Image (cartoon, rainbow, N blue to C red; front, side):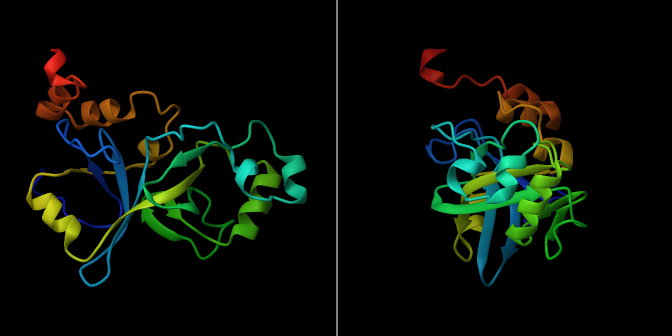
Length: 195
């Protein structure tokens, strides 16, 4: 792992190509909260839901739903924990007070009534507001132990990665952007036995 990175909000947890856990295989998780006393919380960035659902399918947006501009916002799988919960990352701190800054120009949360207003205004796009069901969570010390066992590769997050144009081959894209040996690992076969 790069020497200058550690577990902190805004860090990307990139699954190594050999990680077999089906919940995190070839995943990229944005660490949103990390505490030595309370554990860790993150959102998987590159996992579309198996079923084609959008925000208006799972949440009553009320009157603003009729005025959504453009396509409805797709949901991504944030992780295996509490898949009945909805989380959001955005680039609208002025419209969503109470949000927590995770990385430069990336915010987490805020009042959902304000999200509805933002959606109705047409100011948000999928490149500035993303929705996730569920999250990735670790108990106290669990994520550090996984990191010590080479269970994750750490990388810096940036808004362009967090709000991508497409989720196609997202893990490979992140690995390639990291360069060097990671770019080479991005070509690691899905099933090495088939190589």
